[in-house]
Length: 195
Image (cartoon, rainbow, N blue to C red; front, side, top):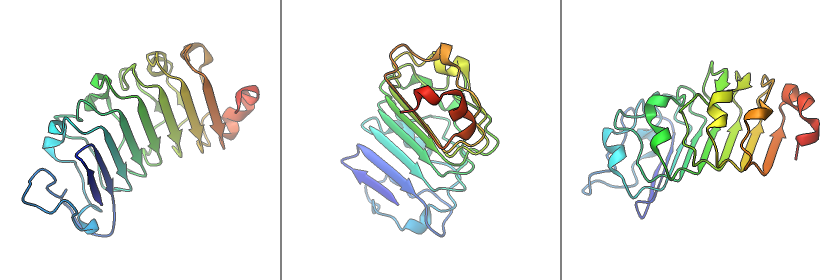
């Protein structure tokens, strides 16, 4: 379902049928399209980056979604959540590192074959809260990607069963809270840091 709230927030969720992204940019169309229009969506609209007043973007349970448009994401986003999108893996080509207002990023589920996260230059230094959950193939957190997160205050990692290590020398000095849940290999290395 696409939800528009004062053009500041969009939530995309899947349902059972459909292949094309509903036209959320045409004022003559219904802003509450059938849920079925999103299930097989393979890409977001090219004009997404033109929604400059968009502050929050949630992308949920879109199993066929594979990419972000070449134009990238709206420049004023402060919150981005990607949840249970099996084929959607964050890439530097998305231009997230240019989103200077982005303070919250959450990724949950999906991202098959993703063994390392976040890549260098993937996220902007403005991120102060990072949540990583249910990335089943994740084995380690990338030193180069983490050391760039100079504003990181809260790091939450959960249900990543193969995650082995967290490079402690690259965590931001601004980090005030580290939560590790249901990560058995990582837990054994950081027992004293679990909150």
